[in-house]
Image (cartoon, rainbow, N blue to C red; front, side, top):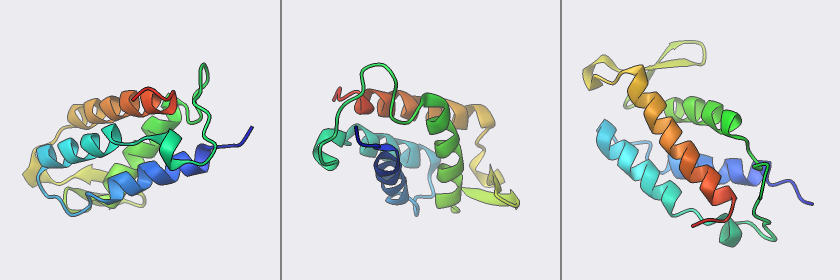
Length: 118
């Protein structure tokens, strides 16, 4: 059985990267979610086998990946506060709960997509 981890990670990364220049938080969230809704791993990855029980990228790993990537790839909304630590810019009035809710919504979509449910 092939490992799909890096291929799925690349697809997720590319779908976040597409929206890196958006400065409005709501528009950014809507665009990323729309991109994730349009992912089809079966069509995008050769010989992809949807997972039944254990996800190719687990939910905790997806959460971590999304928290890191969302901030790193959209410096219009997030700023680096320490080495590899990002926070929303003050002018956007985004709290940590907003980010967590957004990440969780993305994780649910991506888990469903890994299972081949479109």
